[in-house]
Image 1 (cartoon, rainbow, N blue to C red):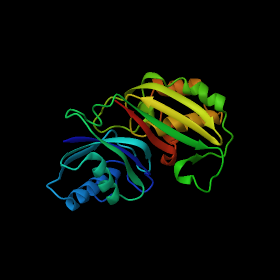
Image 2: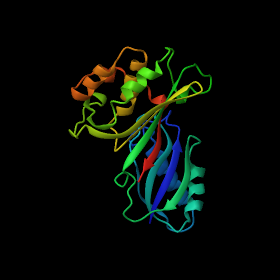
Image 3: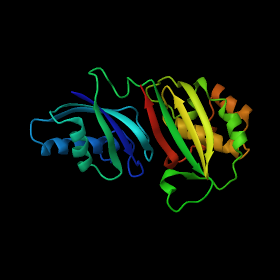
Image 4: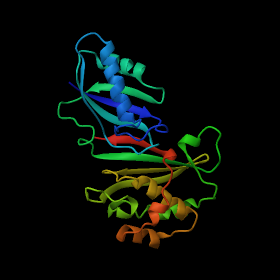
Length: 247
């Protein structure tokens, strides 16, 4: 049986999504919770595999991460959701579980992903783990002008660390939007896929444009020729959320 899981989590205390030895991760915690839920249930339930739609970095959150669970069980999806949630810590929650087609794959079946980044214009007593507070008065118009350079197919080599497997650094950015909501600046980026640290470096570059320290010419050059400047501008993970996965 293959199941589709809709998951939300606070990534603050985790070393990202992917299971690792000697590190607390979202995937590792979920696997343990599923195994515990099956061990406490009647019948011969068995976990075969659990995969996510993407590997969120250390400290990054998810409003709706998608995972597929391949297992042998007679437990109904809505009952299984409750049983697994009972085994999970408070900062991970399964929103819904539904049956999926046998050929569904959380990562390979996805056509695009959308991330949300939250910049705060003010210090907050409650939101520190979920925002990037920038003291400077950001010029939203300058950020939006630079933002318009990113949609389309580009080489994002300047916006990611070198890949040991030498995978392509070309990414199709479908849309990017910057809006304001009270004291927050909200940046949404939707793309075919994302490179490691890509969103955080785009956000850091936009913030520097908002400080009027970068313009369209400099950022355009980052997309045409490799530069290590975006790496030095990497935004913190606290404000970043995987918001939606499209299939």
